[in-house]
Image 1: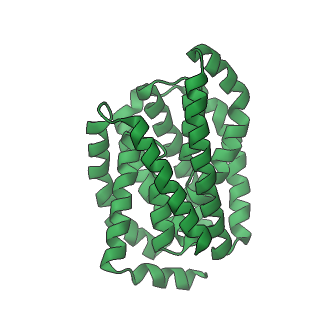
Image 2: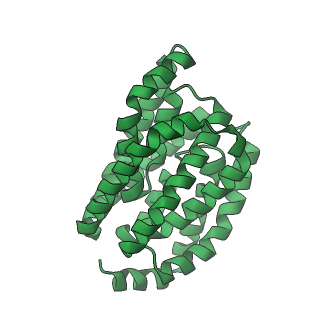
Length: 260
């Protein structure tokens, strides 16, 4: 789908479609301050309502708003040595994802997003089991130094193509033994830096333009209450049940995109 068609689709949103996007934007805020990676649900909604390629450009500024709120909330809890280990590999993954988007049409992007969502659901299940098997935090962190390049490249590619790097990084951080606050703080800084660095690439690819930013301006208002709810719930939420719901929604979203 070309830029004109994507712009027309954005401007012709129905009330129900805008409502679905607004709810998905709220989930972005919630995921950034409570359950990192839960925004795969938002990704599925955006890709279902909007043209798949255009949806990545609309969602990116929404994610950045959520990232800013998360950093303001958990900025003192980041583990910077882990971030510095990840960034070079993530940069390589973003570059590969950018090249892919230069040649991929809307159908290819939609199929890729669907496949990535299913992969991320499987990755999340594996992550939880791996985290349960980790015997000590120090041993897990020692292993994470070796795994950082592979996680970084995969995270960079998935975040560039589908804004779906959350589950990859969640898997990495949990397997590295991070506790809740350090997990959220490290994840907040990671995605603020990575998502901001993606903006020039997305503009160059035509994924971010005037109409998409106007839609972002309206949807950003719904990120804030989602983030506030997440902050209030982070110490009360039954994480295991919520992750099961996220996995289920992610699988359904991925299948919906693949079968369209």
